[in-house]
Every structure is written in C-alpha cells, then in structure tokens.
Length: 283
Image (tube, rainbow, N blue to C red):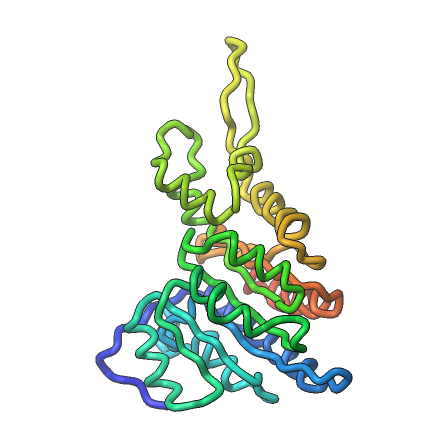
C-alpha cells in the first residue's frame, strides 16, 4: 500500500493512539472467535462509520499511525468483508489509494447516518447468519441516535462508540442553558435520541431566594445516563462502564463505549480496558 505525498493527514494525541490499540485488540479477538464458529457458520464483517483517510500522524512521535480500517484489514484471520464510510470524499480517496482494489472492501463517500441504515446494516442481519463489529468514532456530535438504536435492535452487532464529551461541553452543556444556540442543542438531541439529555445533564438547584435554576451534572453522570439508554432503549444487553479517554492535561476528551449482546464480548473488552488503564495509558 502506498500513500500520496500530497495527502493531508490528521495529527492524533496519545488518547487516540490508545483507542486505536483497544479497537485493534478487540477486533483481533472478535475475528478469531467468529471465524472459528462452525455451527452455524457465520459471516462476520467490519464496519467503520467515520473511517478517515486510513493513516494518522502521532503528535508525540511524528510517525505515521495506521487508522482503525488499516488495523482491521491486517487482522488474521480476516473479516469476510469491510464496509468503510466517510463523509469526506478526499479521505475516501485516500483509503482507496492505500487499500487498492479488493473485492471484500466496500467504500462509501457519504453521511454514515444514511449509508449505514440504507446500504450497510441490511447486509448484517442476524437471521442471515451475519455478524458485525461496528466502530462509530465521530469527531463530535455528528451521529444520529437512529444509527445506534438500529445497531442495538439488530442483535447482530458489537459496537464501539466515541461519546464526544468535548463537543458537548464546548457547545451544549453550558451552565447557563439560556445562552446555548438552539442548533447546537438540536445536534445533541439527534445524538441522544430525544430531549431527555436535559434531565440527565442538569439537576434543579434552589437559590437563596427560593428560585430553582439548572445545575450541570458531572461528566460521569451524563455518561452513565447514556449507558442506560444503550441498555434500556437501544437494547444492547451488555454495556460495561465506558473508558474515559484523557488528554495530556488529564481532561476527559471523550468516553469510549462498548455495547454488545454477549457476555463473552463484554468480558474481553473489560480485560482490554483494564490492560490500558493499568498501564497508565487510559484512566
């Protein structure tokens, strides 16, 4: 695989490198287990809704870092098919340049909120003996709840999800709720699925004058409320506590969620989460 020297690549921090390692470790275990399944034989696929250009640059070392699609393509035994989606046509072109012509790789230049529901998820139906590992790693609040809910209802998908806390806090979850731009609040509603995020993110505090004002809840409370939505609304049976991903200053950039229907999958992810947490790379 070769890469054009003129292609512009994203620089990523240590938290993103840890995330890529987590995804790679789980994808390897997932493919090994699914490929060995024989009764019935399963057709397992890899799905990436925000695939990117395939390669990043490490802010720490300055070296090239393979993205999640390339990591998945190098896993043995291989997935049966790969569905890679990105809104940016330039990134999709970069992926095609890196991957080359492969009949098992399907590239889509478009909005994953539409592409996944229309073109990808219908090819991962449970009754067709198909299973999928789906990575949803948006840069911010660019994902619709309908995608998450559908993935849960299908019963055939294991999902990693970037819960974009930085975007939420920067644009929506303000202490003064009256100043939030309605368009930004609308993005939060589409991601969350309804207006219940307001109740999850704020409690009512009484002032000295007897008035009640909204008071922002801690980040962990908001993340836990979303975890319960994944379980009770989207229908994922197994949703362990997410892993907080922090920058070099210790601030939480996002939470990495995992959701599945299988206890075995949850146990594998917990081991992987603990591996990086205990190594001091994720906290």
